[in-house]
Length: 265
Image (cartoon, one colour):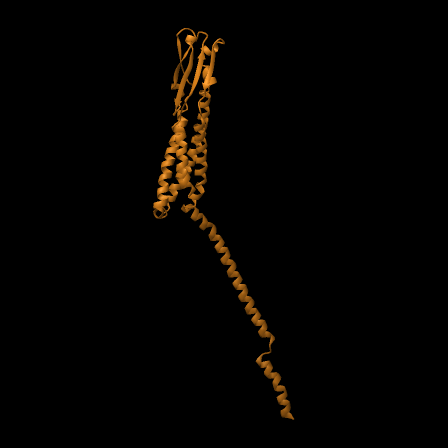
């Protein structure tokens, strides 16, 4: 039930916080000649974080000449893989929710449904682990590439001590950090659900039967042996009780003694 409730929600949070991100930073270059300065250099970037394609122009503080630069790095592969896993996990969990609620009888008719569910759950657990780890590394690269201090080092004007270069504001990465957290939460959720899905398969049932058969045989053998011992004990006890009393012949012989004696008298 936890899987049915939380899997679609966690998947939505994962791809929404990553795929819907757009941010930027602002820099300022204050040249010695104030007319050449630019105090508001905006650099915007967004998903899928092909930062090498993000270009911007900055003053060189050497007349009206402008320098065209680009950010460094490309984290599009890890970001797109993460979002793709999240979208397909959302679609599958949504379909599984419908099956669990409205088609539970057909789901349990044969072993095919639980087996497919088990295999898909294992695959998505692995994909969430790989995708979240790759995106965590990609996000680290994005943070380094968009660090204002690193971007200022690309500007030739900022290498001259007479010019003043500074960051007006840095990019906000809180939503991207949230996407990584939800990625690993999805991995924990899907991996934890493997056992519950496995119990629905025929593999678990056959394993339970395999373990229960030797126990039943052992208990039946024990009961059979106990029954023989009891029957043997009861029969031997009866024989002992019978042997304690005198037989009818002996009793007759003993009683004939006094009768013959009276006859002789």
